[in-house]
Image (cartoon, rainbow, N blue to C red; front, side, top):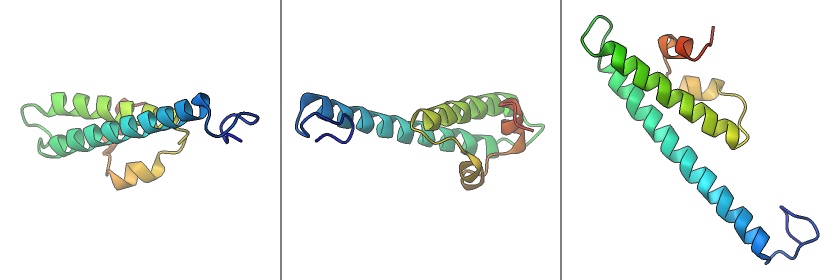
Length: 99
């Protein structure tokens, strides 16, 4: 029996499709996480008041937002641990509407 679709044999095409979809979600999540990490690193390299800070802040906020959306698509609803692990600054979170 398929875990994803009860009643179907485990080796059915639908079960294989389900595994392929999960693999794609995992790959997309990894890419989004790496993009957010890199954008946050560039933001840290641009101290407040320096040229390029505003652009780095926008890029970081966009990357973190995309990462949060991808996490939610994978079923992860809480981002507290990621905020701590990635050390996401308040300025980025404020752009996402966090208080």
